[in-house]
Length: 525
Image 1: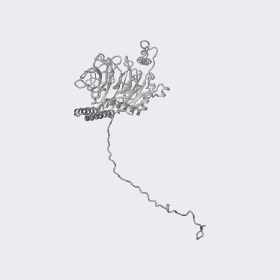
Image 2: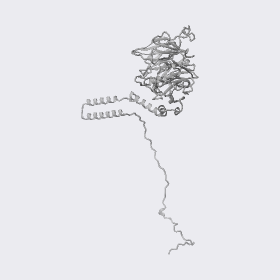
Image 3: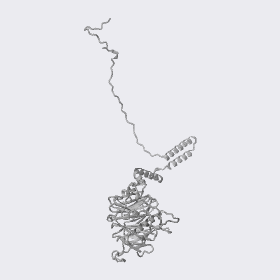
């Protein structure tokens, strides 16, 4: 036996041993890399479409056919002919296929869709907004702000005119100028659409500030414009040209002072288009559009009237009264009203222009607007700087009803959907909306729209919205609450059409007749 004890008497550790074969050398790890030059990089950019791919494919096919013919034929004329065919095919490829009319229409639609998506909440309010509080109140209403139309080049200008298109109910025109005539400069005419609120569809610059404008009732592309320097323009918005198709001159005739109002008239059997203007130079003019020029025919001189004596007098300094507003009767084409700077309202006729037919007790200051009711041919209203808004009946020179709005009233407008609804814009930035069928004394809504002065106002002929312009080049769009949208129902005892049927015009006329009867029994029919 082998003894496991050492000389010291201790036993040897059986696990304390090493094997020589397991004692190998482990080298230290090291990183190794190789550096090379980067490959060259070039940028390539090209626009490709379906037509270019097709033309390239056809050219490659023709070139391969040409090579086969060169191999089989010794005549070089066939190769030259194929080469000419290839060159003709390549020349037919348009260098820029995006700048054409079809692509422009597509981009316009894409722009409208993107604008609609970006303003989806406003478009929802435009279609579906209703004020739930109107169910519990009958003598109040509200206006919901929608869009604000603007244009970069129209900054620091005033909105001096607004007019909806007669056929395209989403299109309206805005005129830009200055109400401060000491700093009057160039003007602009912009056509906006509710389908694209980000940019005007059509823009025409003018040499003088725009004061008034009007769309033709039958030909929606014709737009008549009156300017501060007394000139008038006719613009065709169908064309892409930035120049008017007709413009007045000293040779054809021109006003000496600003043109305050312009109105198209039905030409009847005549093939010549015509419109009327009134200016502060004291003249009412008829403009006829010939094939080559725009001709001016003075129709009437506005004579001064002594309001105390009731007789006409010629002043040595001012022989004519300055005209501020004009409007033609919807039923009697020859009958029209003229408002003057002296505050007088005159009834005139195109058939007899020597003197006034009647003079109404107007305002103490200049008349800013005159509007006939669109459904009742005997009712009209006026507004002035003297803070008053007055409603007249044709047979009486005294106003039926008068409203004091507390500030200068710059513009008024009847609603084309209801005979008793109208609105006014004042210099304190408020819009006053009335419905005579619900409240004869106070407005249903007096809402502040802007901190600036409001200059113009106009109702849409289709939707229950109105547009308001201010003196900061903005056009505000407002939607009326349900209390201002009450059109009315047929009333018994007020007649109707043949067969007892009531159309919209008859219902609205009867609605106004009821209001007149509530004021005075002599107006009841």
